[in-house]
Length: 398
Picture 1 (cartoon, rainbow, N blue to C red):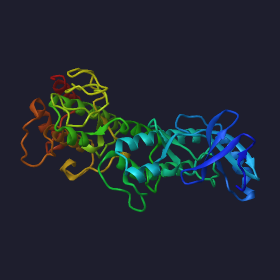
Picture 2 (cartoon, rainbow, N blue to C red; picture 1 turned 180 degrees about the vertical axis):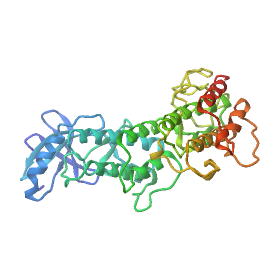
Picture 3 (cartoon, one colour; picture 1 turned 30 degrees about the horizontal axis):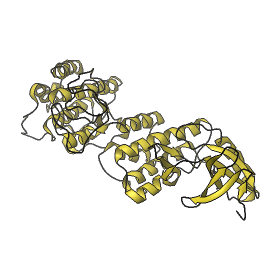
């Protein structure tokens, strides 16, 4: 850098930012703060790096820190980027500890969108890591580091790096050779993205992250609010049954239906007050009757169509089910999926998994459906159409 104090006659260099690789500067033409970074490279790589940097300057997305200019000074290219007020994910976790899963998922939504925007433009980022993810003071996550040279990496490398970054966000450490265990759906998704055989389809990743950014698993909702009412559990069952029907019609099975793989809005059960200090901004979904009024949601008692009551995480990114949610025949099949649905709904209304001899004390009108789904004989678990009608009747009884 030498004695350089101004780049291209307009960018006056000021103090270092973060670890010092990036500096604050003032654009004396546009009269605004910017961030600048010198690309310290072997001379033979400078032309290629400048070309990539100019391509990156064409990227525009709300979650991309824009490259505003590429200038040469002392034979080295410099990137001029928009200045973002905030801290990196690396700094945030170091100062405050790991992020809650909901916040980490929202980070993932933004970073994945930024990465896919780059891929659509023919660019691979190549350096997705906690230091290049900025958390703005507005709460938005932005990806910086575009325009840095990358050595012929494939787009899948960015997806693996995103998974490692999300692992750092929720665990406070890189994944290493043993990614974090846990039944929660975000950690299950991270493990699927880190699979040495390759990540799941991008569309599946995007949809799952979008859901995880606004909803919680049924397991988490039960832990936070207690058991669900029979009507709400039936609405959840309807939504899951419809998802299963699509797979079963293709001759497939899911194989991982359990409370941690079912996502649902985080709202209190009907008639139940919110635990102290807990609120949710999620709207009451279709098919649910709200209990206590929730900030951002409809008034208590409002009933809307049930279809958004729950969403089943795709099997490819769902964590394995605990033994209590595996059918007794031990063979994955559509009938085993129905047994697992019954076990999941049992846990939803009773607050614990089914066990031999366990009584149904809260199931009410849902009890006959649960007895059928939990039959030890796969042939007696019912036909999906009849199950759907029975669940509709219970869901509409609220």
